[in-house]
Image (tube, rainbow, N blue to C red; front, side):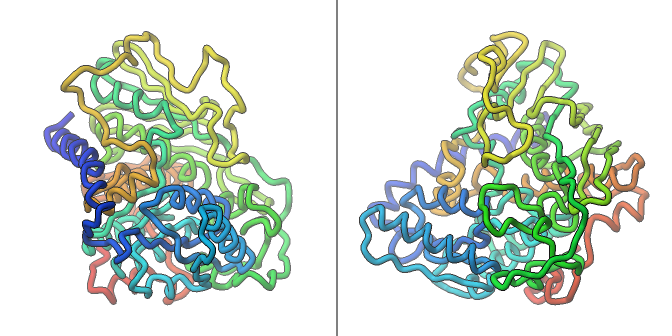
Length: 473
């Protein structure tokens, strides 16, 4: 571990525990910057679909936060979110619940009484919503991957740091509940329990074609489809490429449509690559060499990759390999053994792919070649910032005014590695990445794919940044 990375690790480990110390002061009336007058963080939920409901429930579970607004371009989903919030607070004994429903996220970020927003939109909308919210001084919880492409991620990082707001990426595996395996295994790796780490093997699941050919449909009256497309290329409406009109539990089609999300390489890749980089001390860096191959869906309503094999080499000599034949999770291999971690039977939602319904007692979510590898770390060991719950950690970090367990800088690096792998898949050639300059070396075409041109100027994140006086280079 180099000195700069070690200093950053120790710094974030120290401030991670500090959040708990300031909490009693909040509850006894101490107001800190970013807090509303009623001493509860006033929150708006933007995007009220499958993940939005998970995020909304996660935030409402903690008294530190209060959901006071919901926003969605599908009026049916916005209404369902309204009912869900009202029902929750009435279940807590409230007789009159005040909640505003919005169609346009810009009306949300314009409200001075809203302290924070949760961005649970499709991936192609993450950047524009989050950047405008950050520029308005709102704290952010942003679903992973933090943005759709690399240039957006760099711009979001700049906006967040310029406005000094708190951003938590939806990399829930960094927090203890309910993902019990990732923290102890990655801490063991970071503390040298495997000896010299040389290989990390990652399985991120596999998307399969829907079996349905593309077929334009009539846009439902409740959906503002033109705005839903936002920066993505213009195309006919297909329910299979947007979200189900009669379900909140089925995986929405945008996840498997490349114009809106890049597939499993960023969908679950953002989770597992994030843990890999965290464990090996490269959370503020990235790979230097990428060799990626994949098959892509054709003649199907969906368009993302299916089978894949990705090899990424890091400057510390560790090779990270992703392959659809690997079990979902991370296997760390070193000179003195191996350790494995996965979610096991824990799902974000019931329809997440390739996650076992149950585990063999001898094949649980946390394994190692030798039990000693996962034994308790002694005094003086390096540990991750404390985080019993991802949403609570975000709220406490807003109060304490320090980075949460999944801060913007590290979320950007996770996205960059995954998006660089996707670019390698598309170009079908080896790539060299410079993690310091965040560009590909000697490859104009690959660098051009770091950013997608917005469909119209009103959806261009660069326009928003320039209006705020912030450079996008």
